[in-house]
Length: 401
Ligand SMILES: Cc1ncc(COP(=O)(O)O)c(C=O)c1O
Image 1 (tube, rainbow, N blue to C red):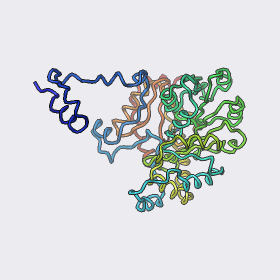
Image 2 (cartoon, helix red, strand yellow; image 1 turned 90 degrees about the horizontal axis):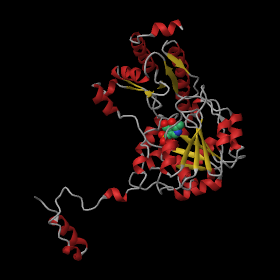
Image 3 (cartoon, rainbow, N blue to C red; image 1 turned 180 degrees about the horizontal axis):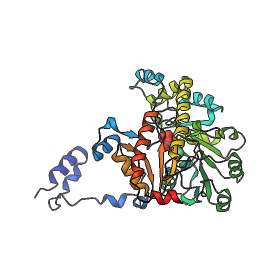
Image 4 (cartoon, helix red, strand yellow; image 1 turned 135 degrees about the vertical axis):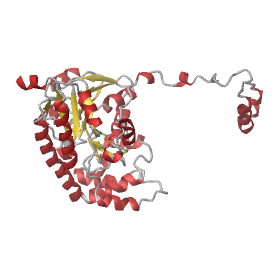
């Protein structure tokens, strides 16, 4: 039987001679000296893990499909890719240097793009980081965060991770925020209301009048505008009037920089200063900063692709609406949400996957979220759904009703 003695001696001679007295002959290797579990945060086992979609390699392996044959319509990415200017900018990134910890040039460019002063912008390693920073700054343990499911799961995970309490007010049958329910839920410990508009995964926007009603509750409102470029209006002009409004946005979707991680928040200067004070020093890396600057400088060509996706969305909505087993919901994002009838969403998702097409599946209610792809990708999806429809046993019953 091996013992730890040799390992401990090596360590001891380099650090603290007195450790020589520790003789561990009696400890077999498979018995840990320290019970590391004892040191891990008590609630960590109960915290929900964010379930990211599987990687391309994982999917290819699991379904025996070449990576080049996979169509990914599951992550709301932009299939047209970033501006050519981004690729050029990447070649000039000074990888050996730390980036600007204040992201000054980038914040100025984002401020100009958003129509607000520079000091109201906080840039981050994806919108996810801005959400986390905001929760860290606002929440004391046990404070409440009001969210409106079905919605982006990161709000819940991040609130719990920051020792907040999540209060959920379900959206109505058309997925509108129930403003009265949110209003009734507000109490002395409510620190934040979160609304995603256009909402992920349902795609609908929250009316401006509802946003104003929520703001008038006097509690901080996180308005997630990750998909705003695909919709027809932002609430950014309200930031000047309502210091409790925080808008979070991302360059992942409209400008196709998901892999580089660049998000930003727009908020009152006082709050921005607090987020900037606690953020990791170099949270925006040099490549992400260069890419975002290049994208914003070449905005016309980026917006051409946004427009192509809007057109593709209209065609996809029309085509999906013709599928008898799908009920389509109006969308202002780069994805379409559909409820499934006559089959489980899981089954439809699996059948699509077997044909090399990845989409996002929800169990309750049975629903699919399908990202708008290129014209070819959308056509492949429709062809596959046509085949799958033939396999839904009670489709004729659905048609009859
Ligand atoms: C609503 C919403 N907010 C935020 C994010 C996170 O964006 P980022 O890629 O910038 O972290 C996403 C990503 O899917 C999203 O759907």
